Image 1 (cartoon, protein in one colour):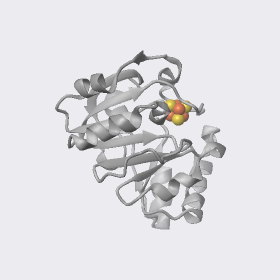
Image 2 (tube, helix red, strand yellow):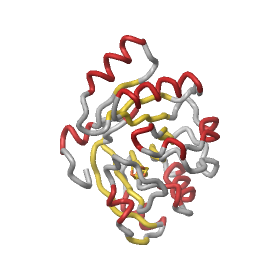
Image 3 (cartoon, rainbow, N blue to C red):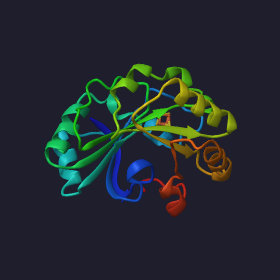
Image 4 (cartoon, rainbow, N blue to C red):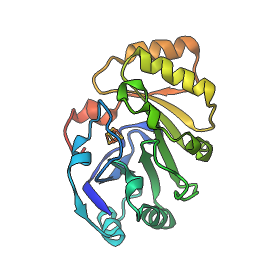
Length: 208
Ligand code: SF4
């Protein structure tokens, strides 16, 4: 597989926010989100590594996040996920919502964190809705929200596509959380509103 970086940090998003985690970021993405904050992962060709080498990098870290780019573009990703899970790791797989999930292992140690791209991304038409049936109550559906239009889109999407997965509303870096929080509280929505913790701590630095 091709990776563009790997590092230790705190999980910055979602159900495991704040947990010390080893990140493996694959190179390459099939989407082109307007507000993409990891353009380097799309543009950097990265380096070719084997699954054995990735396992060695991760070492004894108990929590692993495989992210991108888009990790599921790597043909040996199912092998890596199976090796990690069979080795007792807790794994979060971050995927952009446009790629088939059917090769992803069904394992209690794996949280699938799937995006639903909202209109400001310019990629909302690229979502693979059939993936929704593969998400369960251990997984998460993440809406990255840049403005009120995105927020109302996400609310409507949830009404049209009820899910057992945990729903996360994440604001695009730098926008005010209060408008999103107020609307969610007023409507009593069954979602979590979470900032990106790593950006609060380290700003826009890479490899954190
Ligand atoms: S899916 Fe992720 S990596 Fe790809 S363009 Fe969108 S934000 Fe960037």
